[in-house]
Length: 513
Ligand code: GDP
Image (cartoon, rainbow, N blue to C red; front, side):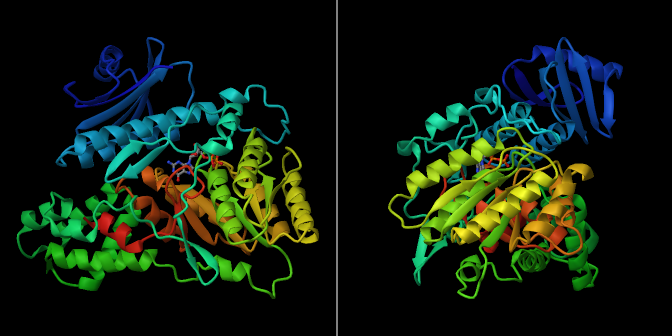
């Protein structure tokens, strides 16, 4: 499949291009001039021309367009997300000194992720589908990328894309590298470290150096104290440029204006209050100390953790990372395959469990898979119930349930979550949300939070793929503010040890600089 992305001005001047195939874009520009496109929503258009399907997003005086073969169908929300993220990355990095390479890598990642959606959208409706005719094609070869020293680099490490038969071969033990130093040993517990190098673009030492940041530009733009409305507007723009949803950014800034309650303010004073506000939002007001709860000797049934999220966000990978961490703590883990709708989901978990078993040979702890195949509705509930009974009988400490990750916009497909919540009574429900998602994250978080009915909420987030977004970390604020639920961990890569505790200080610094 050929695909190409381009950022351009209405005059036709190309500002940035991924893949050097310009010619079909002339036809797109022709469609724009002649207004022969279809408007999907304000500022989002689509055109089919010369067997290519174009999607076009317009913002102010800039267009970003992506095209691919017309036979390919992609969810237009995902395309919109990709184009919005690209626009943000372009606007932020284009003026940053030395930002060109970083911009290219980040935009390329956005397009790669979008194209993967094409091969992954094999969702099964209420009907069981035990046979997976062509599993090798289900997911494309995924590249392992890490954010190191401000660069998105490809690294050769264990690939956890084990949902395909091909992935299964890659799941050989020698490929299953884990970072021996990823965890911290303290008081007989193995703890997850705070995120270091991934988000560490602006360490304390670096902050000493003068930088061409938004904030430094803002300070010189205003000079001293300036009209509070003007300063506020600039800070809204800053937050939105970091992927904070516009209404969320406005709410935060309005709170600060209210606190300041004066007509003139310096950028520095505004930033100080913004830092306080964001820190308050991201600092958990409940204990995130899962291990103590799990190891509580008074507990009478296995500790049940359910993991939910939209397909493709990294739900099963991060569930496997949790399992690996629990195994290091000598806890016995039963992984239950309750994503009984999506073709390939059970096999994907089986591969993770095999890998975990092979990695865990030197530990006394156990890990196993509980599965009852595919099926809709009540099948999820029954599978969860049976898994918990089995775990109780076999004395497992934890049941980790991979719950059907439905599309959060379809109420019918979210329905089984309520039944499941009522039946399994999970001790914790963790939603995996990906850092890439941006504005849609608010709706995702709210819909999943409501899906369990009045009696139950989400407990925590795991924000996956933070290694791929640079400083566009606004999704964390979107999700936390929409639900008041804290972030338990962030996912920082594709190996089982790529899980870290959030550094609130670092994230706030990235959002405000
Ligand atoms: P699911 O459909 O939600 O269960 O998603 P998967 O667990 O299959 O993950 C989808 C893809 O995201 C896989 O290629 C994973 O290796 C990748 N992935 C998951 N977490 C991370 C992360 O923290 N960083 C990166 N770079 N990739 C991740």
